[in-house]
View: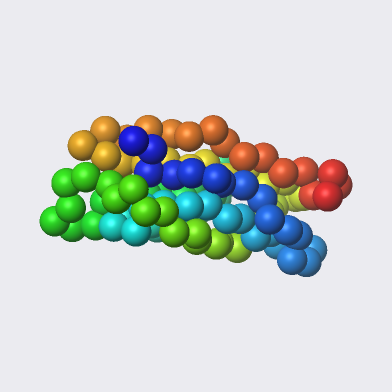
Length: 97
């Protein structure tokens, strides 16, 4: 079962600022991180402590990210049963918005 569904770009909030939306099970949590050397934002999703199976009920989440040099790279990854899987990378060129 996927921990991340319906992910993608919602809107441009301003110069170099973008809003993303994604859905995760209601018994999961997420964190965001940024690797400045690679200019990549990562959204990591994992089950809440004490949970063994993801819920079938998904809830919407939103995050705001800043781009660098007009390009935004966002990876989504999920950790389930001690296995981390990367979902497709979303890349937005600010000039295409």
